[in-house]
Every structure is written in structure tokens, then in C-alpha cells.
Image (cartoon, rainbow, N blue to C red):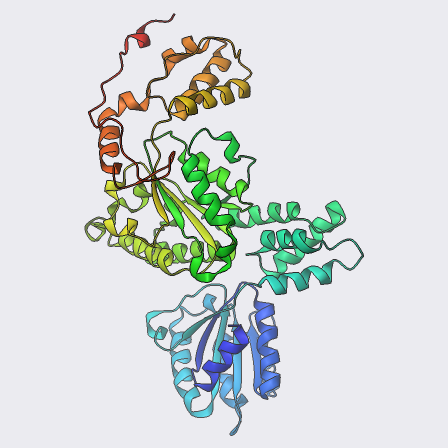
Length: 495
């Protein structure tokens, strides 16, 4: 629903205190002014720069006193009509005791003379005295049709506006930007390339996300071809995201939860998935959601999820999610319930969101997560990513030997129980130190050695519970025996 549609319903229902959340206040004000003209309502506005505007009382026109502006609306009312006073950025003044009392009194008086107080601000900042007196409305960011209209207004010359599939890519890139930001992105693209294209838009969008400090936009060149193994996981996610049936709201994919020892390629898979299905990858920093003030963490979480919804279609990556929500169960004793509330907010969004967001969460120890996190219909699948097999390791060796410009004919070290990250480390150290791969092996201690017991427990838990990332079907551990530690003599000698 648009702001106009929602606003008119609340006015007709006589909600005399309305808080409109908007980062585009001029656009919101234009919509409200148009609505007031259509409905023959009287409209006055106030801001700290221009003061009170729109009233017939010349004695208070231009007054920058916020208290006087609130009291002026009663003189602005008419016996048969409706009067609306819009207070811009009024959250800066609402902590004053006099302002709070005047607002509370006026909202109650407005029920009698149909006068409406509208606070227009980018955030909700209501003191306890006013929480029950205001309703909060959202001024939504522009949808695809509105963005396309803005693009047509900017690109006035032939050839400047792309058509068909390329225009869809432009609108995908612009999704989540405000009208002001979209105009700037389109103009920048015209200046640089002579036509509207996604490249400049993605650059501006990356800057927008950096300003929030909550999300990072990843747009790399990684593809599935650069990943050894994980064939079942690749096919599952590719089919889910590229299926024409996903346009059906009820068949829209939700995401996957990946469980594995560290260094097995979970994060690399997340980043390559976006390129493979032509979606941006948003990386959520759960640590950045935590704030020092009461309610700040919850507000940041809502803001982050709103940004994610606005940027759909996209892939949302949450790395090592167990570290973020592991303490939700005893949160009341450790952090006044903050972690528990964040976990609840995220679960609610994960279960109810209707935006085309594919969530990829990774975990090294799912036993630390509350059990409700992994239930059906929160994710499309729970996959176990085991240590790479022989064929996968050979592909990983070849990839990194080529990347670091090493001799492909040289002998390779014993890579029993190595992860892809350890193979990469060995290759990088060989190139950095100008030594052979076998010599570089002396500087690599595999996680299968340092965390043998935890990997064994992880495999035991995943066996029969998780989907196999390499082969279709349920994962079954090949060897349920506790893995033996590797001979560490090679750490003390160099061949």
C-alpha cells in the first residue's frame, strides 16, 4: 500500500497522532499535499528553517518555535473540515517535557476538532508518554515501476535508456535506492557511459550500504567453476533460484544452512552463488547489529532486514551464524535478553518475509544453535560440507598452483584430511617464500589435526541428519571411528 492510501485510512479512522518514517521527506510531503488537495483538507507544515507555513494567521507564519507550531493548529481548524499539521524532523525536539505535554494534549484535542499532528522523520523516537498516542506509517522506497519512470525522465535522448532484459538488470541494481539516490545513479551512469547501465549504479549502491555499517555488498567474479566439488549443493541452489516456478509467491526459495568444519568452502560458495545466478550478495555483520543503548540493537536489526528486503532479489550471507545466536537461550542472564530478542526478530523475518531473498547461513557447530533455528520451512535444506575428496583436492591444487604461478610438475605434499583453505595456504606460502610445495607443507597444520575430536563429533551429528553437499541425498559419514591424528614429525624437519 502507498503512503497516500494508508494515510487516508488512518485519518478517516481519526488517528490524530501519525508518525511517518521517511528518508525522502520532500517526496512524502508532496504525496501528503496532493492528498490534502484531493480531499479538501487544510495543510500546514513546519520545519526549523522555514518555520510555520500554510496558515492564515500572519502573526505566527514563519515562527520557528516548535511549541507555538503545535498550539497553532487549533486556530487552523474549521468546524466542518480536517486540518493536518506536518512537523518535519520533529524527533529532534520531542525530548522536551513541554513538547511532550503539548503533543499529548493536542492529540487528544484533535479527536474533537479533527486536527491531525503528523511527525515526518527518518527514525522513530517516541518517549514513553507518547507511545500509545501515535501510529507509525512507513513511506516505502520506490518500486520497480517508479524507478523505471525516474529512468525515463533522466534518459531523454535516444539510446540512453536500455530496453528489455538490460533494463531489468538496471532495475535490479537500483532496487533499494531512494528516489534521490536513483536519480544520482542514473545521472552518473549517463555521464560515464552515455547511457544508463548497472555498473555505476552498483558503485553507488555499495557506498549506500557502507554508510549503514550493517551490510556489505559483494560483487566478485567467482563462479561455481572455480569451486571444486559441492556438486549436489550447486545443483540444488541453481535449480531453486533459476527455476521459472519461483515467480509463484508460494514456491519462492528461502535459503540453505551449511554445516561443515572450518575451511571447507562455505563462504566461497556463498560468494560464487551470487555471480552464478546474477544476484548481489549481501553479507550481514551480526556483530554490527549490537548497540550500547537500550533498544538500539533491535532497531539496527530492523533496519538491516528492511535494507535486505528492499534490495531483493539478492543473496543474504550470514557467516558463522552460531557465534551470533549461540547465547540466545540464556540471554536473559548474560545480556538482559538482547541476543534472545535479536534471534526472535531474525526468526520471525526468516519465517514471514515475502521478499525474494535467498539466505545462505554457515555454521561450524550447529549444536550451539537453538533447535528451532533449523526446523523445516525456515531453510530449504541443511547441507553438510565435508572435507574435500581426492577429485576435489586435485582441482583445488590445480586452481591455486595456477593462481600463484607455481611449477605444476612439482611434487605435492601429503594432503590427507586437508581442507581447501589449507591447500590454498600451502600454495600461497610456496609462492611467497619461494620454496617447494613439500617444503611449504611444514608451515601448515590441518584443522583435522588441531580439531580432530570436534570434526568427528560434527560428522557423527550430520550423518543421517543433513543433505550431502557432494552427492544427492542424505549425508552418511564414511567412517564413524574417531580419526587418528596425523604424524606431526614433518613439522620438525624440512625435506
